[in-house]
Image (cartoon, rainbow, N blue to C red; front, top):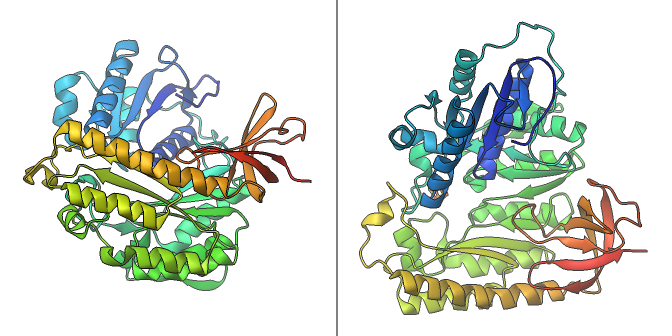
Amino acid sequence: MPVSTSNTSPKVGFVSLGCPKALVDSERILTQLRVEGYDLVPSYDAADVVVVNTCGFIDSAVAESLDAIGEAMAENGKVIVTGCLGKRADVIREAHPGVLSISGPQDYASVMQAVHAAVPPAHDPFVDLLPDYGLKLTPKHYAYLKISEGCNHRCSFCIIPSMRGDLASRPVDEVLREAERLVKGGVRELLVVSQDTSAYGVDLRYAEREWRGTPRATRMKALCEGLSELGAWTRLHYVYPYPHVDDVIPLMAEGKLLPYLDVPFQHASPRILKLMKRPGAVDRTLERIQRWRAMCPELTIRSTFIVGFPGETDAEFEALLGFLDEAQLDRVGAFPYSPVEGAAANALPDPVPEALKQERLARFMQRQAAISAARLEAKVGTVQRCIVDAIDGELAIARSTADAPEIDGVVQVQDGLAAGLVPGQFVDVEILGSDEHDLYGETAA
Ligand code: SF4
């Protein structure tokens, strides 16, 4: 429960689980609670009611969410559940029949209604202590910017569309106004999130809206151009390799957008990708990566993969390793395939035995670790622009343009304290060393 203030208002505890998209939902609910004068407290004891924002994407997340609800029930007893797992109310009710209310993701109105019923708001029409950029759970200098909800794809391993519905983009002027407020409130880095950033605006037929006196299309490139006018770092997540992604790479080369793409490739075998029902022209991936790098040599590519998908043969797995060698991705996460309740992939034949999945995962990670380490080592001797996240003893913990918060590595600045660095500050760092994940250096002269 990360947020605390103190006054005599009714008190709400808040537990936020799940992905960056769920974090954005939490921020919206917390903002609304503060607008209505609720006090947000960091302990179960002090809370009149507890809201748990859950994740339900994979089975381990379901278990974590149910545990969190159980803990809140045991410690406080008045619990409101929201978020992805809320779509599976029966699972929650079975485990915790006493919860006050259950709602799904983005259902802010239901959460607020349940809070009002449990603890009426204090009668204080003048409670408005809120800065107009809202309340954020992330450190003050970076913020997630959610540009759409839902997804039009139907990847066979994923149940997000059944939980969150089809793609619903936010009009471009609305997103840009929110980004502008965030930057005015001190945010130095905007992290664009959605389920499918490349598809942004297709549901709105790329509708034009006005922002800063100029018409702008609700479309990825126009959004990125607008964001680049704000003077903060902008980082794109969940970008599928559609041809029009090529349009934003020049913005990266020009320094308007961070040269960073988070592209969840998931596999390299065309047959497995077909079984996964993945979007994008999967057979052209390597060509596309080469074109992007030719346009913007500084580009960092992060991706995620699933190993041991049902039916994955030894040859297909070897092809995946071959892809890693050729693609030379900078950052890679991998998961052994794990069936998600309700996902179409569960019905596919030839599941890969658990031990083999683990063996493939280990081989995959080993192969990629060497690639990531070599790519980081190539930066030794260069100077990298970084943003400081924290001061830890003598060190400043910073990130370069190649590092997204929470998921990538960091740059440890050895003389961070001595140089007087503070969180949120940009600094040039001379890179002196590297390992598989992180870089080490000191402030550049
Ligand atoms: S693109 Fe696929 S994996 Fe991503 S949210 Fe949509 S259906 Fe799920």
